Length: 502
Length: 121
Image 1 (cartoon, rainbow over the protein chains, first blue to last red):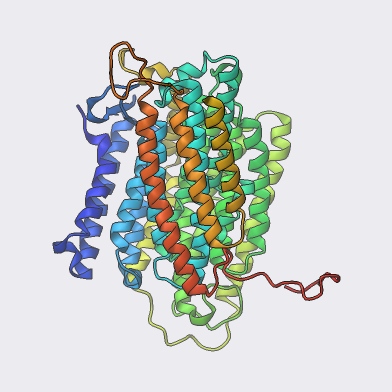
Image 2: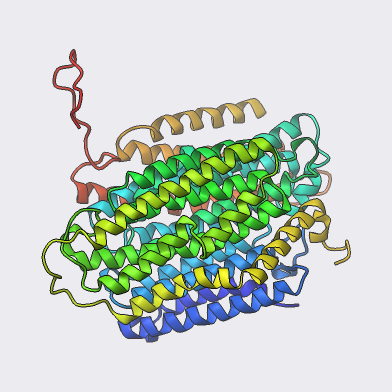
């Protein structure tokens, strides 16, 4: 049996434990070195998984060799392998950035990051609905602690909202799972998908209610419209590397919608087929609008970026709502691009805040940065990529989303809102950039230039933008294959159950 | 039996939701606890309720669905940890911010209830 699919969960967990034990925990230098090496190994494992998944097919890993649908399975397909890889790169960059000083501001930074990644990877890999809940809780409790890393009034205040909101979300998640289990009688996603097709009467309605409750929960994680208010504030107060890692968190909500709703309520689900799609379309458009309005009215760069994360979620949601192979492929490409771009921008905003002293990253006149050119170039690239200007990856991603829309009403609404939100992003970044870099009063402060490790981390994330557009051919091929595989699994979930022939 | 369990879950959920919407952290945490109880009972009942069934296995007796019991154990443990974290966070917020309002600041009471104050934040 191939044990590789379990590694992205086991490795961060063991890394977190190791980092809490004496040889590594004693000095900060050992922690830094140890966590960077472990995160590097994690990246290598993720690359191996990516290569393995690209060979075609998917891998099922039955934990404890309990065969599905009775045991818990991990499912490694193209989508989960890709997202595990993105998380691994993000973790490495965040740790590298943090190792230049951010880790001093609070205890247990590295173990918490590792546990957070364990939860994220688990959520991406699991094929069992209740297991998904467990991994959500793991990543949430790690994120609660990471959010207040560094301490301070603002963090406590934002974290109260974030924690309470997510606790309510967890309750709703459990209600949804219990209703679905009561109606369907299984928790293995593939098995559930097969059983939902044969439901009728009361159980059908119950399954519908359960599915809708799950959409609310995933919408909360993804920051879909009525549930997006927590995001800008949370991401604004978090320290740079934590905010960068959090950039993948909204994608977990979107991923769960693709995985759970795509499989359970896919095209072949009978009466319930595609039941959330009209909601996703309307809410996605509204999310785009509210994110764009937020972005142009933000007082600080981090908050602008937070609102643009909401914009990217809206883009992903409307791509999901179109629900064709082309649009899912576009969503996969766009998700990877927007995660890297937003994470890079959070790190840049953190660097700017550090060099400007008292005004932090607020968009007001202030003293000049210590390194205006180096940071300015990085900001320029990140902003162009996030707005979606050619020739960077954001342009290709948005183009793919736009091209995937078919009917006239989709084009009318989708194109106009998406393009207007890009315009809003452009306005927001022009305002922020010109104020932060040009409207300076007085000479540069006597602050030291940033540590090289920070720039390396930022460029590592920024490199994704030109690379994803330079190698757009292979990347788009991969995302097309991902979408194809998702539709295959959704139309034939029996593939994921043993005894049906691999 | 089903009526009773459904009624209890309904009452717990209602109280939980009401308390979660309050303005201070203590009622909110109590509300979350009640929601947790409700959800645990709900999961327990999701496999169907069996009266006078076998505790583990016994011939001739109906066996209740064991999976919800395993699920509810997991949910209880996780819920307990999360509530504990919320309590500690609420205390920390009380210490850091000087009050126990969930927004970190007390809403200003209107000085003259007859006149609405406009333009004052």
